[in-house]
Length: 485
Ligand SMILES: C[S@@+](CC[C@H](N)C(=O)[O-])C[C@H]1O[C@@H](n2cnc3c(N)ncnc32)[C@H](O)[C@@H]1O
Image (cartoon, rainbow, N blue to C red; front, side, top):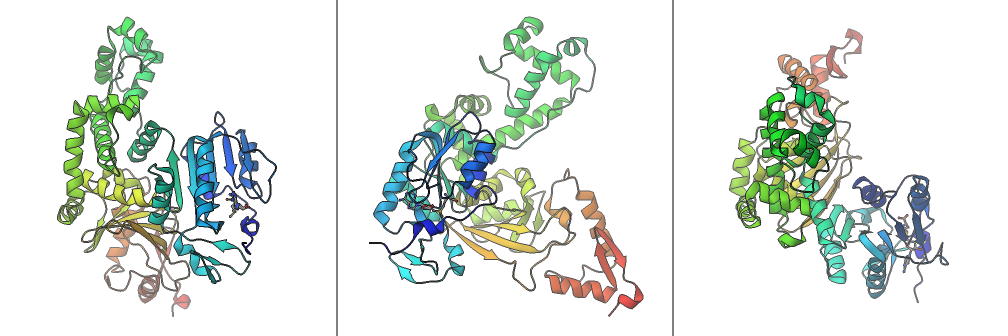
């Protein structure tokens, strides 16, 4: 008989749990979908979702044993499997939660790097803490493999310690393609044209469609298509008129960007195995036909890129060729918002890391290693507000060993700090000019000369003190004479 207390693992939550917040953010949980929390603890997630108008229910053997276990669109199994001591029972619970999930099962568990703080007394494959609770700590890859073996489905990493399992292959692929697709703004109308102006309500949905997908709609995809055909002769003619009153190069760029996004998706979809063309969502099949002619030629192009992403010399070359990011001898560092501006090979290289890690909390920079198959996800202090933010944590995705490592810098007395922030971001990043002006000033004052010491907070503070200056906001100011050491 187990002497540990699983019920004591349920904490009071002051915000949504991470897996539920992710599933909400990723658009899986909403008012038109039912949500079931399997092992809901004290039910705090349920209460919060209920207040948002989401139809919820849940069950927990310790807190809500009399509730029914009912099927739902989204089922959450949040930090339950790691508190179950018996490995066979863990699998039974996972399978039972999956049985209930009509669309997506969200599975989370604590990871090995969280084990550091727990009082250790080994029992079975886990530990018993001071509160006499059992905890099995997984590695990310162990958790992924365990879910896959138990359910015979490839889980998708949503974040460290959190996986999604999709009932329909098409939903899994939609999620995968959305993850690599960028957000774009609809090009503005610059010249007047009476026909376009008179039919704005028909033209606008067409503009929105082409901006989102980078191609013209096929039959049935755009509800306004019959009216557009009646007024302009065809959807294609409406669009060609639209090109004349907007900047045509913007549409060409949108098409190229969208094509690149789908190509990156196709490359990454090879892990673990590319789905059949028929299993893809309809709109993605239309995208592939429009951009590559056929699934086969899209996959051939994607395979060539995938091959390059696995070739460290090609990765290094791409790092050197990249037009965004700060290039250092070991790696290219890029702000997360600029990943879409990287060459396709590097987007795939980064995507391999992302498939291991999923979304990373507080992500600021991505570090693409030039000589080792590794991608790190770095979280810094407020990147926009703090002039020289300090590193808080790093998650390293090891693409060879297929695993994650975590490093916490929050308690470090002398953490690394950033300089020259404009180098990490794309040209259109809103604060870029502010960053660049600060760098110019710091360079002029010789503050950035001592490259071997200013990379950590103490070294940087020493350089500032030596020059008798401080940085306030994004400005360098002279210290008052009596403030100098
Ligand atoms: C760490 S708590 C997590 C609670 C909640 N999901 C959350 O994230 O706040 C683990 C919960 O798993 C429940 N639990 C333990 N054994 C279980 C089992 N066999 N089936 C379902 N839930 C179980 C416990 O009662 C406890 O409430």
